[in-house]
Length: 150
Image (cartoon, rainbow, N blue to C red; front, top):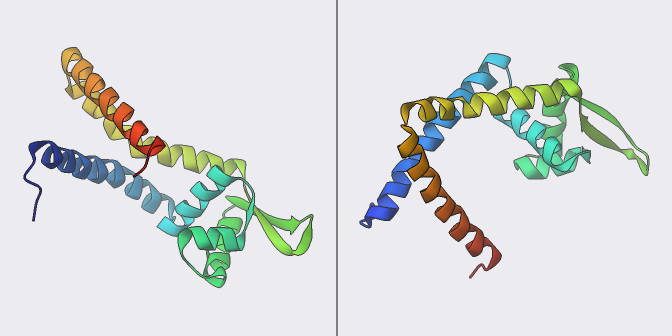
């Protein structure tokens, strides 16, 4: 049953549009470059966490170590990541993002956000000010909820 509160209904509508529009460009970019969502997820994990091992990436993506290793091998072949021995444990392989991998991530983020520039051009300066003010309120309240979860 859809929410009856106009505030919640409007937020759901905005979130739906935001997700569809931002993901459309992101998915198109990923497909055009020949990356699966798991591969992009692995690149983002490495970007956030730095060097890590296969099991950390597998856990983050919800796949087995064997599946993660196989997926990462393709990224090694594409020179998006490097795999080397962990200096503390030679049995463990450390995965690191390459410069080429970082560049692909930046391009994917840009593709993900391109439509926001279109939206900006569609709004008058006054409308932009109204949206900014409303979003500041939402950011502040959401941040307060994060600091004090129930």
